[in-house]
Amino acid sequence: MIKSFMINITEIDDTEFALEELESQLSAQELLKNTVGIATVNTEFLNSGVYTGVVNALPFPVLGMSAYSQNANGNTGIFLFSIMVLTSDTCEFAHGVSEVIPEAGDVTALTQDLYKKISVSLESRAKVAFLYAPFLPQQCPYNYLQSLSELDASLPVFGSIASCEVTKMGVEERSLYGGAAYKDRLVMLLAAGDVSPRFYIGSITKESVIMPDIGEVTAAKDNIVMEVNNTKVDVAFKKIGFEDGAIKDAGAITLVFIAEEKDSGGNVISATARSLYVVDDGIAAFGGRMAVGSTLSVAATTKEVILETGRDVLSQIKSEHHDKAVLLYSCLGRQIALLGEPMAEYDFIGEEFQGSGFTYVMAASGGELCPTSLTEAKAYNSEHNQTLIACVL
Image (cartoon, rainbow, N blue to C red; front, side, top):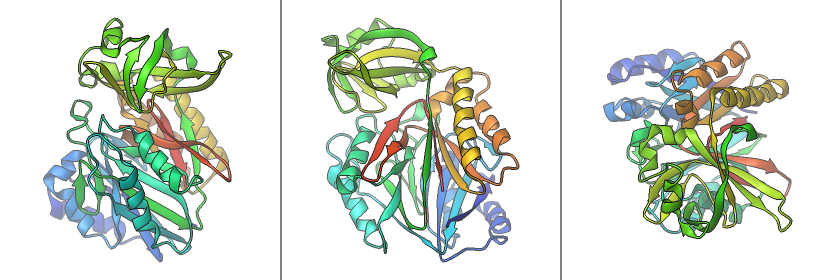
């Protein structure tokens, strides 16, 4: 069994004042045999040194990611630093940081070496892996997940790509391990023993489609598409309004591509939501794997869709659990799509969880990692875009 509590730091500039905030919250808590903290922090805390100062003062290890905004147990805003503390006598934790991730190229050995390095310290098999990574447009998150599945097909992987202000994605977001912040390393936490994670997903709806069947992917590798309808992808996408540097346009991230894979009879066998990050000469980089043969449509994320999918996720959690720890990651694109009400989803989550007894944090994600389903033999781990994911511990 895991017990949890939240530490919230609001002092962004002065480490001494931040440590006073920390002491007032930590002194009231009891730590059990095994403890770990999952940090969510705006990059300004990294730049000021407050993050490192606070983490170095803690009596337990910390890992996590930067996030543009968050709601940590009802504390909602942009300039926040929170730590979800997990502590247990019957659950054990193992954690570590990888070698440098190449900007492009194979990540199998790097990911598997990290898992092997940290899993040896566990007395029993890991029940869940939490994975945090920086945003690298030329790296497909699917390959991190696939590399772990090759070692343990039944291991569920949950986590997020780090985020920051949207126009600085790929530059300022960081993964976190201890007091260090990385622009090019994976961070992983394994939990074993008395832990039974449950996962929930809320994404866009079919009613959001605004441009159906714009073409078929005819050349692709991982998350990089080279051709649509046998035409260079940048040429094809320019016809529908996407040009160089799509990520630099905040409006572009409010749109999402739906990629449908069909069988020989024309029946849809898979449909995934994918954000478009970069369009360049002959390539388009998406937020997840794009299969050759997929039919593409374009959908718009709206306030109604965001709140509807959020309501569905939270109603399931509240009906099936109580007094648990809940990690939630919501795509940064969902927040941007809320236009003049950018914190509406965070406020809604706070209202729904108020007085519920849950310890929770919801943070802006640069790419969501969550299993779509689980069997005894296999965890169907997947990357997501424009999605709200949740893990209940």
